Image: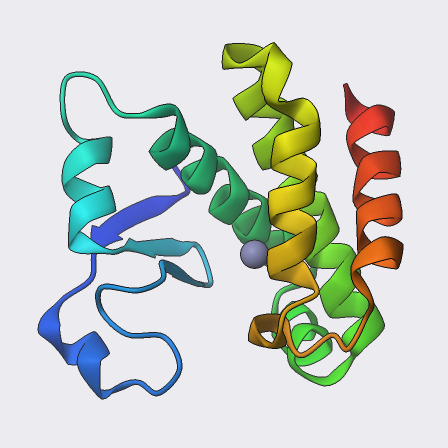
Length: 143
Ligand SMILES: [Zn+2]
């Protein structure tokens, strides 16, 4: 993990549209920018499963970037199919981690993340059922 940097989002992030300082964490290249709340929790004595899972999600994006460099950003921004696959990989890793702590919540996590992925946030324009199916398949593949 030494090639992954984790930083606290500064006030400057308030100037960036769509992602704010306090709403979402963001990853640029090999640097993960956590919201102040997540950052403080991550560096506390007992970070929550949710925060650790989020860092795992963002770390997958760092690995995707490191594997493809500039191409990753281009494909993520320009191709819905590529963006979906990058996010499915990241959410599946996040769910895999989370169910190690809460095995009874697998279906709940998958539903939750499928809902987010099929929302307007990711501009995937994919229906919930298809995303749910794809995410379930990926989780089953890696667990
Ligand atoms: Zn993501």
